[in-house]
Image (cartoon, rainbow, N blue to C red; front, side):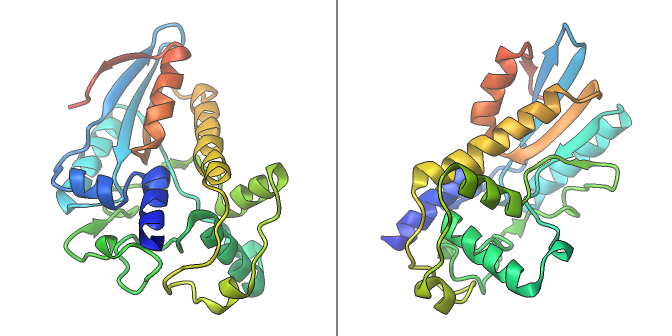
Length: 239
């Protein structure tokens, strides 16, 4: 039951989880889409990402991003990585345990064989893990996301403190996780909805007239509809 729960959680959060992943793993190319806001004269190309896939998929992402840069597109990408220089080792450990309690697993590379908190199907060396390098992100690209520590702060301000118990402290981060988790509704509100609101705000208020948005596939179910309501007309898939 716990493994099924973890599976559902990852589907909801990152669009790179087991069931969805196995259905889309044979994809060799990213299905980008183009949106245009006539009033603002702005163009948006979305890159729905699967975070564990064939290397050909990431090669295709890299090729298309390189092509868009040559057309003066600005690349926006996701990353909840926190600035560890702001915290002590003990504080970082607490953040990681709270994040695991929130998400149901310890966040590492998706194909990390040592991370038993991830479903076994993900820990598969046949597939490549998405990295900055294999999709060709550069120093000029811009991260637009809410870091992990801020997500936890938002959750605790909006709902309640994430209380760690003996089970959390006694279970290693990469061990199978069977401790009590937070409610799925509250989790999804923060992990998905709050981040989507931030993404939308950054895109709509950006000074750039050409943007490529590289984000997890499930985010775009909500974002695409929201962009359409804000004047972005769907045009076509980018080739």
